[in-house]
Length: 449
Ligand SMILES: [Zn+2]
Image (cartoon, rainbow, N blue to C red; front, side, top):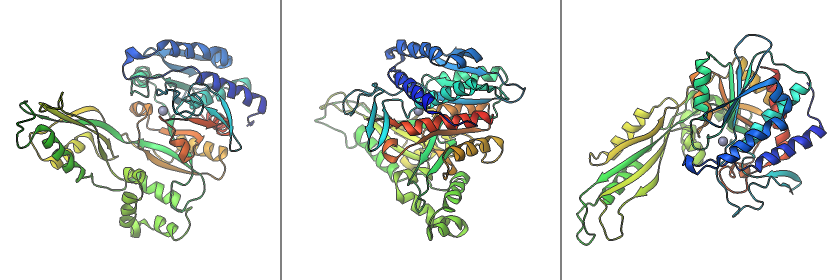
């Protein structure tokens, strides 16, 4: 396999820059979306990737999601490479360089590409297209069909990817491998391990919002009842906070601990590789170590929104709290609702489920599809430990679990803790080096499909 060469690299970076400059911003209210920008990006791609648009068929799904099919040489189950090109909103305020500038910045001996969408997730889309274009230029043809799926409303949990899956399902497509954003190459996330770690999401937690409502006769705040609706609601929230979900390791958690633990320094290595002895202690450690490790071992619940009276001197006729819940693998929406009901234990607090999505199935960590991802990572990032994990957030790929048992969530980029903190926040940017490595990753993966 050829490695990426410098002249291509400069052009690839320029293409990413120009696509960052198209503000394809997702908004919850679809009427507020500037669809013209999405159209601009869709129209820009054929000129940038002429071979890809000559050899692959492209169709638009649900308006602006793109589905490409690259015909393989043989019959057989296809693969799907996914990314999304919508981004969350960003204003110039607080950004060291403007979010849609696509500026190249030298910082700390690194060249950085600045802007919204570099890490999440235009960087992946561009890396996939670069890999396809590069492979075609060398005369490569895939053995089996490869689909590219670029969603247009992932950030608002929209319908793009779901409609793509409907379409593929209706055509009888059963992918042997689906790759989407998710984990990355990270460092310092696991106690006692200094090597870089590639975390590959083999599952993702479920999600739902639970709206708690207390209703009561209204009136003037000067003559309040003993327990106002707001107070009853507050009591329910306190009760809920006192009752976290039960913690436990899933099989994926344990595999991650064993995989990474084998590379840890002693005595941690001993603790991580003798789980028969140390599991209870480790569970305690995970619950306390950080918010992230705590979220790994249980269903999480957090009140995100509160609403009460219309005026400061009126009693609330209706007090509501929204609880955002992320459901652990092995549990369910129904189980989570039951837990909350019991914790609150008050029939006057009404529960209403919004936007429920069950935890995903778990993709295997053996077999050809897993091995293709793992080998491609190890060749691209030598010395990196590859481990499965359960993704804490949700991605478009969850829809694909309907038609594939092999869904892997991995963005092939190095991301420091600080860089991960820029996702959906200020100063999102990507190192040029890691962007180019991401292209190499997809080149290697494509060659295996
Ligand atoms: Zn994303």
